[in-house]
Structures are given as C-alpha cells and as structure tokens.
Length: 149
Image (cartoon, rainbow, N blue to C red; front, side, top):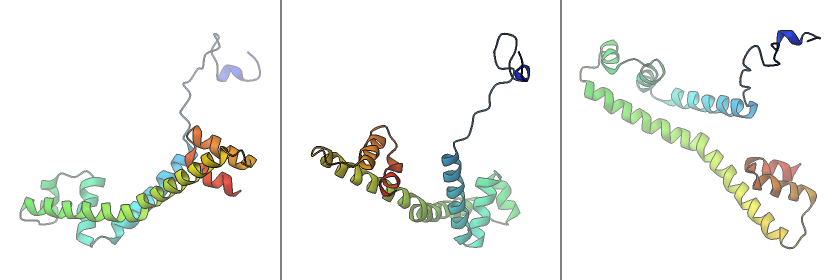
C-alpha cells in the first residue's frame, strides 16, 4: 500500500483500528442546549433543594450520606424534598425545553398537512416539494427552515 495507507489498513485491506463513531453535530448541539436549560432550572431552585439534587443525581451520593452531610435528621424528609425538587425541575424543563420542541413539531405537522392538501392541486413550489419530501422521510423538524429559506 502506498501514500500512508499502511497507517490505516492492514495487508488484507481491513481497518487497523476500529473507526470511532462520529457524533451527530445537531444532536450534540441539542444536548448542550438541554443541559444549559437544566442548569438554569437547577439554579432557580432554592439553594437547599439544588444542593440535595446535585449531591444525589449528579454526584451519585447515597441518601444516608447526604442526610449526614447536610444534618437532615429524618431520612423521610430527604425523600420529600427530593420529590418536590423533581416536580419543580420537571415544571421548569416543561416550560423551558419540552414546550419549545412540542411547538416546533406542531408547527411542522401543520405545515406538512397544508402542503399535502396543496399537493393535490399540484401548485407546490420546488421548496415546498422539497419540504414535503423531507417530511415524508422523517426530516420534519427541518421543514419550516427549508420553507423559509
């Protein structure tokens, strides 16, 4: 083999080192955005709730250890506070993350429905046809972007 290919391939033409999976940049960005929203939601919690949540869910500490560390006398109190913390976080995430994505999906489905009915009349522009095709193959979240370019 020539041109440095021996660094990558063996004599039989197979890869010397398994290829690493390439991250999906859109997924990585989405994950970063979600983590930022989660971080913001945790910061909005009362300090004691935030501390309990981080110690338990992020640091993975056992409840008994957290109770000792924070001088919580009854372990049942710990679980009550954790339950209330999770409810607050869920509400915050629902308002600041999930409702945003639900709105995008709803708008996308509404637009796809409009295009589907319009396609019966064969009055679609090339961008609309491309958007309808993207929706059919599962690229529904990109549909509004395609149509507005």
